[in-house]
Image (cartoon, rainbow, N blue to C red; front, side, top):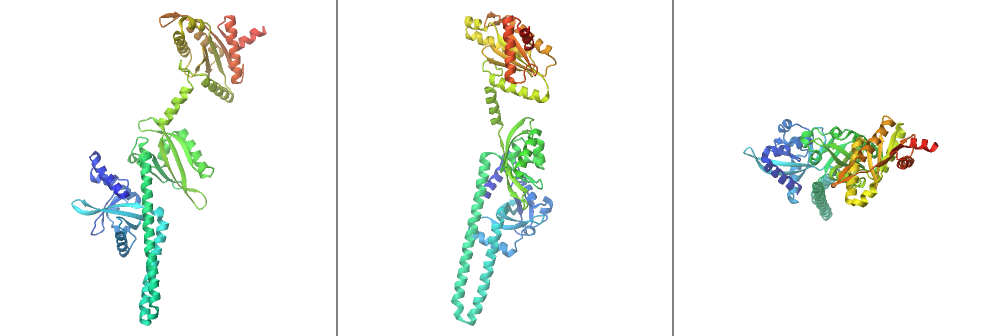
Length: 498
């Protein structure tokens, strides 16, 4: 059934985009050979077959299938007869590769016309994952057949010597033949189960639209499917030769380091599975998010990771949605500024980083003095528009790296990092005061308000987030009370002391 699907895919590939038969044959992902049915000469081999057998195309075209198939002509004939008796359209052979290794393969052959002459299109599947079981079944069958031949010879000799042993030998022969019969049934069922599992796996991979990868941890050899490359906007041919270095070249450097750490946790046995979210550079230049997952499927005798398999899933939309949700959770709905929750998080981060790097930063707290009368007399729509105007004014007067927040109501805050001196911070505060105090037109109404600003510095005034807010608030209320409009906590302390 799997090869029927592959043949349909092969035919579809010829039809789509006006691909020639030769192009579809050469580029198909399944290993394919074109064979002369009379001589067994290999007429052509596609790229997948070249990779599987380890020979280049020219070498394979100078070989015959007999150079690869390790079964004797009699064994080949027996396998064909067995396939016919089991009503299956494939054959099980043993094919030798260029490196000397012998693989168990399942071969589906279909008559085709090649350059005006009859040929066999053979699709070759490597089923060596089941090789131990197949080998046991194969050798057991041969031993049983040898036993049958031996018993038959004994039967003939015994018949000439004495009729007394005839019945016993016939019974023995019958038992042997029954054993062979059930062995072949079991073998056929095992192959059908294996092919069914492979088909289900292919369908699952197709249905989930994930990229797949296999990697030899010791040698670095790797195999990737078409979807793996498609996620980053390429075809496999564009990336060849595809190795783990290809992955590292496309992945974000920070994520490569993170991935290596997580892989080491799996290789050392600390974790059973590898799971890592990484950014990969798409062909068009942007970053896409990929969920990279895998497990070690084979270990060496001394406990080292040998082979690993896994998947790549495109999670870019999920990450974009998460980022939108995060921004909504951290944004003031009215002004678009940072909200109280984000402010608290950023202030704690600034305290931690400034303490580690031994640097300073400033916190500015602002309160609109006459907002309530405006809101009461002109209504909430005007009040909301005024708050939005104030937010824009503060943003214009600060730098891109500063964090501007609406704390709530008519209260605002600004975290100013990396300033050159306290005079710069005070100048910024006075600029904000001056701009906010100017008359502004809101919904055809001329509005004028004022603002009180208090400033505290890390670590001079306080070394915790809570104490910085407390100091800035004290300075702000003192500015409001005294009419100074802008006051630092240092000035507040001096006033209190005097």
